Amino acid sequence: MSYERPQDDPPYSGTPNPGPEPTRYPLQPGYPDQQPAYGVLRDNSNATVSLVLGLVGLCTFVLIASPFAWWKANQALREIDANPGVYNNRGMAVGGQITGIIGTVFLALFLIGGAILVFVLLAASTT
Image (cartoon, rainbow, N blue to C red):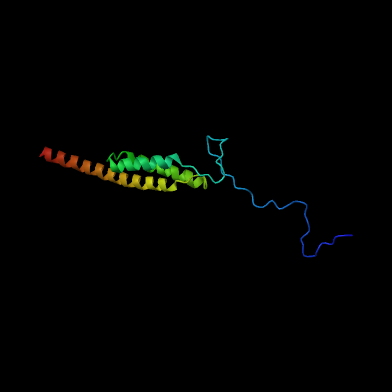
């Protein structure tokens, strides 16, 4: 009794097909032993800080916080783009970037207006 293999089956190579390689998330700097669980995304703290600074800058007119919001948002976006599938709050980073840009523009206009006012007052006081 012998078994004859049908002609259309590929020959057995001796190693099973393992399928696609499982996805591993890249390790974060400073956390060498802590790997996020499969499918669990975490928040980027720079994105949260940038949004808070941007909103503080716009809502309380403490405009000096706005350039820092813009800077932290750019850091967060670089980290999020460098590690896809690790962070889930890219929208917060974009919001922090937008509020930081708007606040920085207001700050620049305020500083330029203040400088013009100083020059006008100095010119008026010398005559």
